[in-house]
Each structure stands twice: as structure tokens, then as C-alpha cells.
Length: 560
Image 1: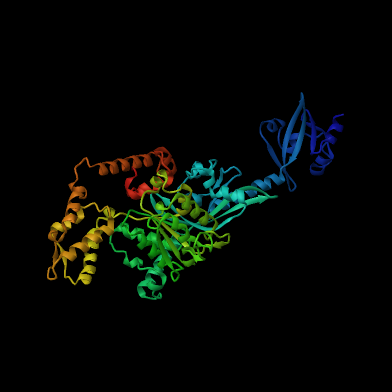
Image 2: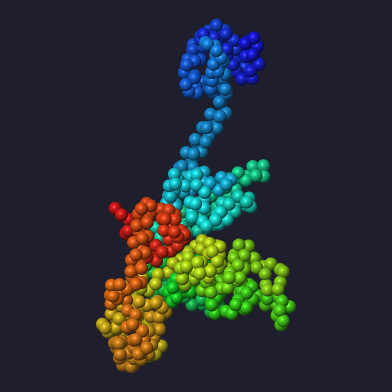
């Protein structure tokens, strides 16, 4: 009866009684042979029945791998099944080898599953992003990267659309500074029309961009590059026109030169007067499209009802008296469009701008015909983006669209050593304009210039020097307090820099407190930006902005 039962089992099977093989089916005979009846099980299989009950046992027979499994029946009777594990073992070996490959490749790889959880995060990606796989794997993407919602995740966008995102660039900020420049592609994994997962492959482009930046700078110095015609491309400034010797300015110029190599939307953040348009023009003038036009629009200066037609153009008949008119987007062609004071753009217009950036297409006012956008867009805001979002002056989704590449310009008070250098540079220029002969600043004036807070930044310093040189007599050599118009003297003396402020001066106290809170949070969370941002109740991008603004770095602020 039992022999009949063993024969009916589809797997290789042995019937063992009192440790000896009493029956086996044809499948078992194929691998073990026919002369097994009556032989001891332990002799044939080299394992005891007791061992089979404790843990899985693998046995190689010929070129196959079997797992021996015992099914106790009664007393000393056992049914032993041989489960073919050959393909599974091959699969395990393959998975192990692939894991080893992924751990050794220099490209960063991250994979998410069908619901947006990270399932793979290799060591190269850890190095690129400064995160640990144990803190990433198993978590949702929007938790890891502190997105407001799932909709902002590119992986989820690719999962839904089943269309890859190829050869994109972004700067990755670590420790409050833009340090890494990544090129990456994101791909869906599709089987039978169904998306199983999404993965991204990233490369660190920092070294390449540094070499490109240095090459362009050397060529420019050697005058190997053709001179850019400022009359034809609409610019006035190059990087050599941005004056200053401070390390902060040198760093931001180097950062800007790297951004110039990348053909993507750029957001410049900086207070009024720091030179946002100068940087935008300089970026354009070393980019690949530097022979194309540069066009700037101050969104605060164009009336709301004219802004849309200025950007997109108009179609004949769209409103009374309208004609077919090209907008700036068509005029600039393959050049660069600079949108200054973007936060002054009306909310409805920001929505249309977002759609244009997403689709790379636009329509003239009153037209149904779509036109393709070919130009690069550089945007600028003069306040903290998080503050603008909270005040409803900047759409959050638009901010995330334009902030893939960001450039944070330091204020003049943050590069204190540049004040006198710039003052002398402006004096030299106005000496030529006004036929004056100023050669130096008086000691008292130097102290006042260094002591002043400069809320208007470089532009305000330029205006002050221009007024003072204008007041000087042609034969005078030294610029002093007597050359300062009364209204300027009152303003500068009323708003000095830190040395003459009282100890309880509120802006200084707030800056100190904010620095202390951020540094304590970073040290508590091992300088994990996402965790610290959640602890402080702000978004990741806001924390990075504040760290940049307050000059907080791991090298100088980490507890040792």
C-alpha cells in the first residue's frame, strides 16, 4: 500500500522504516539508482533522519542540487522527499553576484518598488548623497528626501508614465553647500505591460565640471575664445566683471561656472543688490549658447495684464486691436531668459509658467497653436524661498520645478573683506567718469563703510561711492566724510554694522539663536539633513538655505 503511495508522489521519494529504505519511486531511482532497497538511509544519503528534522539539508547528486525533507508518519516510519533546488540555487548565486556587482560599481543606484519604497541603495549612492542604506531601504521616497507629497517624486512620475527620464542634471547639496553635481537617468522596469519598479543610475559630475570650468577660464585668459559681442547677445557682464577677493565670492563664482555647463533651469537666490543679473549674464556668457540672445524681464516692473503677452506673444484677434506678435520666449530662441523677482509674478501667471516648464511648450495669447521652448530659463528671487511659499508669493510646485539647480549669492555683509576692495574699484571707475583724482579713503570713512550693514548690498555701496566722488573737487586725492551728502551720512550713521550695535540688538540675537538651534539639531542627528529638518519643523530645502546663509558647515560646527 505504501509502495503504491510512494509511486504516486511526483517528487523523488523514499519510504524509510527503522532507518532502512523499504520503497522508492521511479523519480528517486533516476538519481539514486535502483539497488537501494534494504540499504541504510544514512549510508545512502550521508545524513541522519534526525538531522533532517532540525534544518534543511542540501545534497548534490550528479549535476543537481536537492533539499532532503522528512515527513514523519508514525513510530519509526518516515517519508523522505528530494526537492530539486538546482534552479533556486542558481538564482541565489545570480542574486549574490548581482549584489556584489552593484556594491562595486562607481555609479550610484537607487531602486523603488511599486508603492514607492526604496528596495535597493548601493554604496556609491551612499557616497553621492551622504546617506546610509540602513536609513533608506524600506522607507518611502518622500520620507527619505522630505518631499511634501508623493507627487513630487520623479520615481513615482516614471512609475505612472512608464517613460524614462534620461540624462538629467542636478546639484546635490550636502552640509549646506552645493558640493555634488550629478547626472542621472531614471528607468521603469516593465513586464507584460505592468510597471514592477523604478531605478535611477547617478554619476558624480563634479570633477568633470571642475575641469571644464578651469579649461574655459584658462582659454578665456589666453584669449583663445572668440570675444562675445555684448551688443548682439544682450549682455554686459562676464565673470571677470564680478569684483571681490573673499573666499565666499570665489566659491560662488566657481559654483556658478559649474552651473553654466548644465543646460537646465537655474534658480538664483539673493537679496536685492547682490548682483543676481550679473551672475545670470555671466552664466550665459560661458554656456554653450553664449552666441544666442540673453533677455531679462523684471517681473515686478511689468504690469500683470501685460506679463503674459510679453512672455508668450499674442495672436491676431485675441483682444481688441491685437496683432500677431512674437513674445520674449520666441525672440530669445535658443538663448537665455532671465526672470528677475519671480516672486512678484501673479499666482495665475506662475501656474502658466509652471505648465510651460513641465511641457516645454507654450501658446500665444488667443492662439491654439503650441510652440516649443528652446531657451534656458534662469529665475531669481530676493527672499528666502520658504518664506515666499508661506506668504503665497511663490507656488510650491513651481519652486520645486525651478530649484533643481540653485545658486545662493552671499550678501555684502557676509563677505566683509570685499567692501573696501569694491569701494576702490568704484572710485577708479567714477574718477574716469567725473574726471576726478581720488586715490584713497580716509581712515574714518573706511571704518564707517566697514561698520555699515549694507541692506542694499553692492548696489548701495556703488551708489554711495558715486555720490561721494561727485562731491569731491578735481584736485582732491582723499575721499572723506565731508564728501558724503547729508542724507547719506544720516543713513549710514543710523544703521551701522555689528561693532557699534548694543548687545541686545535683535537681528544679531536671532541669527545667533538660529545658528545654535540648527547646529544642535544637526549634531543630535549625526548631520542627517532630512532628520534635522523634520526635528526643526521645516522642509529640507529651507534647512539647506539657512545653513548656507549662516555659513554652517560640518567642518566648523560638528561636535568632536
